[in-house]
Length: 121
Image (tube, rainbow, N blue to C red; front, side):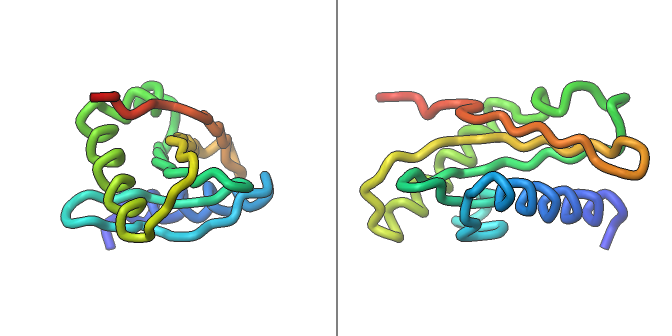
């Protein structure tokens, strides 16, 4: 596996551990609908949370939140819609972003709740 893929997997593991510590239950890792993927699907009380994890080697790559492009958001929303439909979910949903950046021997983790919203048609 390429080095950047290993970093991404490590970031997802750290994000999941962080979310578990915040009281969320992790339901799915890397859930796919066709070519679209959600890194983590969690549940916080009665709310289903679709999480995009962004991991960078350091802050030199810019703000990791900027890496969640409009296209990426739309792909996550489409995958979330497929998950909701396939699991017959009738509950509130939310889209979060968790950023993971190495900070010396540890990692800096930022959890952005309600990071984006689906467009209403």
